[in-house]
Image 1 (cartoon, rainbow, N blue to C red):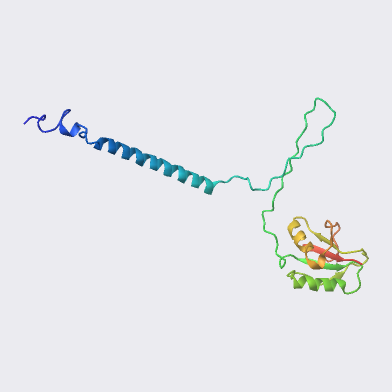
Image 2 (cartoon, rainbow, N blue to C red):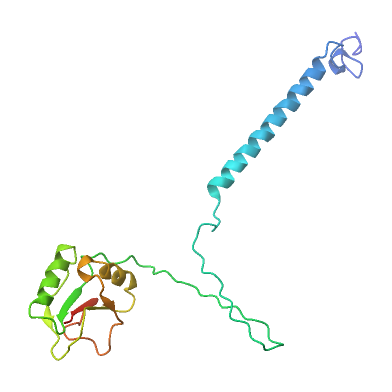
Amino acid sequence: MSARGQGFGQNGDMSRPSGGNGEFARGASAAALKGAALIGLAVIVGLFLLQRVDTSTAGSSVTPVKHPKTTTTLHHPPTTTTTATTLPSTPAKTPDQLKVLVLNGGAPTGAAKTLRTTLLQVGYTNQPQASTWTGHHQTGNSLMCRAGLDREKVALSQQTALQGVKVVPFPSPAPPFSDGVDCVVVVGA
């Protein structure tokens, strides 16, 4: 038999589309439907991943740009000032790590010791004994911390025993007995 009689070649049974019963059309539409379903699934997965991996800074804190006041000077474009805030790279000291010295600066005798005890009770346990700042006399309480301890200074100033404390820069020369301490609280009259 020749190849023509066995159903091979250009006009053989294997190369002819299915008869008029629509199998070829159904196969093509099924393939198109599967392709559309895969594309739809890919779009859904893509949207899901975009939501999960989105690293935009829409919710982050950004310092607003401050524009200077305009002047009547012509020929000079206005300038823009941007302030950048650098966050500390080390964690804040906990109350038991912060070394706090309480000094009497004009208060009645024993006031510094009483404040020291109150701070011990709220977790500020790393304290030398309270002492007197001889020759120093002030009105009201003050708090001073060394540079770089801004977060700790805020936390300490919010303690109930220190409500209304005046926060001041750490002085130079330093208060007496303050070598090696982080913050000094001065109890005034």
